[in-house]
Length: 96
Image (spheres, one colour):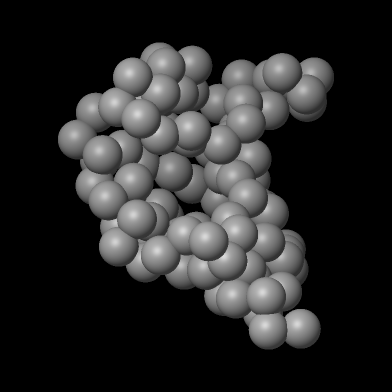
């Protein structure tokens, strides 16, 4: 139960940070656990490639899941991520 709670708490933290950074928008506002989808406000493919070059896996592009929205990105957060790592990720996304 402790690991699951940590995953959910950290996922909610990352989602809020990405939304606060104004680089993503919420396509809907539903309850979620440790996985969530956000719409990148730009070209998601370019963002994903640039973040990979910087050493980050920036979620899964939902277009690869055939969802029809090329800028929707699915994120999952585990208990292994620290707030410092998530903050660094958000800062890198904001710098694109």
